[in-house]
Image (tube, rainbow over all chains, first blue to last red; front, side, top):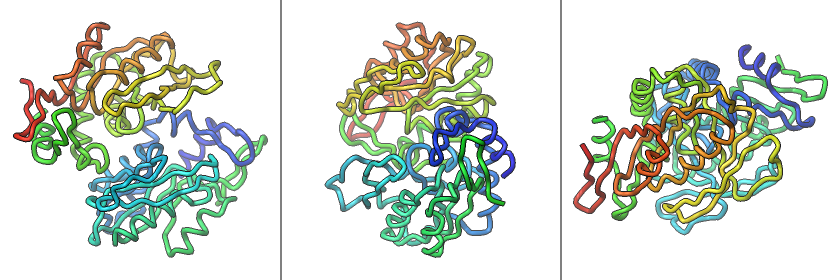
Length: 191
Length: 191
């Protein structure tokens, strides 16, 4: 998606060779026109997959998830991050996730009520690095008996192994910008 | 907003006389058609106020903030909740907030870079109860020198004093559903 790549080149801030800050248009301040286009791009790619629901992880995934879900005319479900497991295992599904990027652990949680065996789910997230968050979402969806139609990622760090892990599960991963290198000389993309 | 009130009556779950769960369409699973209408309603009400940016608080405010910001054709900024203050006071503005609803304390944080004296801000949030989150956002915006054009709330608990506190600051508070009573007999609205 050229519009996104241009924006990353123009406004992305290189923190180090692993960390790219996109606070200016994606994570802290959100460029609504760009986000509308991001949703259109995902919706166009997944439009023939009979998606029944979009799933995302709070909180940076919410805007792109809403954008694509609105265009696919389906609801979206926000998986919640909790610092510890909650007692209610009857109505919720929980799975532990380790974030390598932030070096933190959390419990990803969803209510069973919004996921069924009849659902065909599109997982959306802002970043794909080591794939831990998306894999956590996948585990919850499998436990709920839902099908997973694919994974839509706004920015993929292609030099990390998240995509491989998801593809090894048989998932179709569609990333709008695949960053191959982050350096003080600039940002490089695959393709 | 009749569509929202009907949805609350139909799908809202009364936990006790203070707590109404709307996980089915607003907080956990999001009804995108309803959320599109919520954005239209806010955009229509505030359209002549020369809003330059929408501000919200993660994470349940993100969807309605995106909806209205997209329709007003402006960016939106997500104020972040942190468990403790961070050292960087040069580029951020931080303020402590106490949530009476959840009985928790957090630090609300925004980057200075996305707020200026030329901004005329619309604050959007999902719930208004005691007004602490909106007041925190207001303090940050005042410190940044921005004007505040108004506050848009999806569901107001009119039996708590959040609206009064915001109106005492001279703010125009527009709530789409004003809940006057939550009981096992049902949910009542003002108007």
